[in-house]
Image (tube, rainbow, N blue to C red):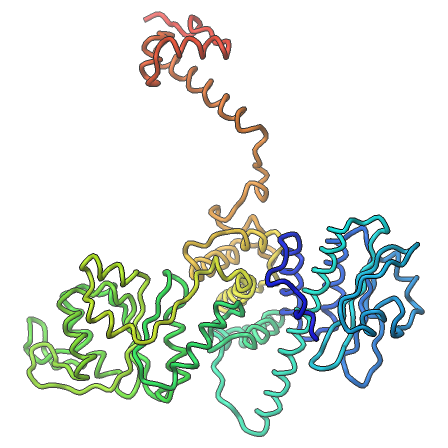
Length: 523
């Protein structure tokens, strides 16, 4: 029984910030043991006043012992304590192998949860609250402990899988794609911190795609299902979500991985030359065609052709593409000899092709030919668990390319990342991190290094200082005064300028005690 077995599907909003910190801490540490005190400190800060004890044994043949205690003042109390089944601290959860709530009388209310490592219990978390703690606070503490244990269990499972893979690779070397920017990161001089983080990010990537959220796991499953076939794939999603990375992952996982991967952005080429780019042209086909040219369909022989922004193709090109999908052959521009193609077709678009078909902008028969196996990429705002991983990855990538050491991203900056809606998705996040990396002076990305679009009232110290009604009243008075200034104290003209009746204007002047006579000036 793992910690997740009795959890709700979603954690309560009150503990989300603490869980984000715990997940990020576990991700950025190659070993679990040094990460546990940091996680315990965050739990203590969230549930304070409280005491938390962490017991853990990294190896199965070692006894479980206390590895961390918060607050500092309570450490002396547990220095000589040993972990015993059925006895506080931590022994209650170890005995029952599930979440435990116990009243320790004088000490307070205790909540304990075990940490599983596969089929063995590797440790436990024990949290003590005040004796008069409310039921809601006790339930929140139990949720936080269980979710923390679950995240620790996931990290332990990931590391165990990586160790198994490392042992297998020593016997039979396996091909592994690097994360984008990895080579440069490992070669950057003096960037030891970045090298370690790059390695950790590489371990949680899927062919260069960073993400562990449920939505991305579904995408990985679909990639694995379709990669072994030659089916046409339609990748949909908002701009900046990484559709080309998905196409590359399908190519790399397929039997065509030894062949070329040819990508073309259909919206970036004018209609006058896109046919020549796709199908090639014969010598003399048009002015400037001084030699026969091979198109992208020919270049992608035995490989994959990725057509990005397929929704921007003209009706003429749509017809020719439909014929290629049906006949698996085409003719160069200016030629009459059919050329066979065996290229696998992957297309992508940010448009709603079904709506485009209804509006007559996209051929219905072509849509059904392309929509053989759809893969939808979720927007970044729906991938909250991935934002911190991506931010770290882009910080490392920027440091590698610029030679500038990026030590970390501050907590206030991470908070802004989490609450922003990211209309530009992953591409916008990368640009924000790069900008912050340029302006930071101490190697730490702070909230004030981020673009203005990400700034909040709290981070800039510009929170509203009055009520809504007070702000409206100030604006109304300012408009009255400004109109009187412009009309030199003529209340009738000022009222017309504001689009209200003179009676209403004079009533407002009385309400705000504004004397219109004082604005009259001599001509």
